[in-house]
Amino acid sequence: MRKMKRGLSLVLASIMATALVGCSGGENTETTNTATTTENKETTGTTQVADENQEEITLRFVSWQTNHDEQNQKVAAAYKELHPNINVQFDYVGDMNSNDYLTKTDIMLMGGEAMDILMAPNYASYIVRAESGSYLSLDDYFTEEGTTAEDAYNVIVRVNDQTYGIPGEMKYNLVLINKDMLDAAGLDVPSLDWTWDDYREYAEKLTSGSGADTKYGSYFHSWGSCNLWGISSGKGGSTIFNDDKTLTFDNPNLAKFLQLRYDMENVDHSSTPLADVKALNMNYRDQFFNGNIAMLPMGTAMLSDIGNEKYAHDFVTTFARQPLWDKDGEHYNEAGGNIFSIAKTSEHPKEAYDFLRFWTTEGVDIKGMFISNEKGAVKSDSVKQIIAGFEDKLDTDTLTKIMDDPDWVDSYGTYIPDYQSEIDSILTEETDKYLLGSQSLDDTIKNLMDRGNEVIEENK
Image (cartoon, rainbow, N blue to C red; front, side, top):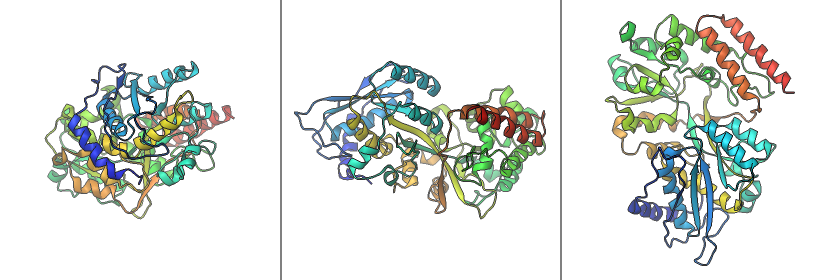
């Protein structure tokens, strides 16, 4: 852990006392500034705490997450407690849409606009921009601090052997389960070694009703990437590329998963049919919190939704880890998250680095919305921060057991070519054909490999 834990309780107490309030979610283009100052004299990262005579510096942090502004301001205020001369200004672009954000910030960078901290919503978009020179390398700053990125964090994705960003708000796969439905079906909370066969059996027993009144035991969303759970359940690293950079689509576990999903949706009738999901443009949050489905394979990003009054519900949510193919298999947990980088146009890169180190360590706890990527951090501690105030709405014991799984293995891909979005589109198109009954499984796998390899050849 980093050196500043002694002063953190004082910082948090001050924040609670001042009760900073951020901009409303609708005012996504509004620029806000932090203004809280105390006399705390701790140090963090590579820079020393400023004295009253040091230059005032404003770091420009550009984000699309307008809805996080109140929490963002708390982190900035906590940092200012330790560094009185540093202000963090949050600018929100993209209207809560990360794709729009990336397009707009790319244009801003090309125009030479001064920015300090930028975000990427996934590894693919991060790698493309790191390779294009949009971000500054952080390795010299880590060296100056006396550490390495790998020593400081669990997950680091290097680009050309350089660290251009820090994954700081981690998200993992997780199955959310309506515990009232589970109890009514006489089923136990799944164990850490449950399998996809167990999942299918549970879904059948959890399904009730008929026709429009059917309560399905399972739900898979319309994203083609949902089908990659079949691969990530039995393989570490990238779910699209093997270590030798060939496609994973001929991995037998993908075909097994597609067959299982097809059978659940069209034979067992225990999982919401993809045809209905698409035709009705279903919202997976609404389906779960309205009690229309019992199990939802999604992720830890939904934990905060459980306490959100927008999704008010009267049942307790319990959880299961991502099912395995083999009870004795590795407990891979696919690690996703936002990646934070220093813009090439930054006028204060050293100060931006120091704030990023705080943002991705102590800041995660202050924000209380995501799981920490800091080396040595306990994932269940992050979860406690996320669910604080609505613990009665979920099965905290089971959630803690999952997050503290002694066999947990962080899994993430380090090879993500700039054409991966084309591969993603092919994945959705071809798997949809099979799941909707217009193509055989064999043809689906063949087309995935043939079309995917064509894209690879075109980009050589």
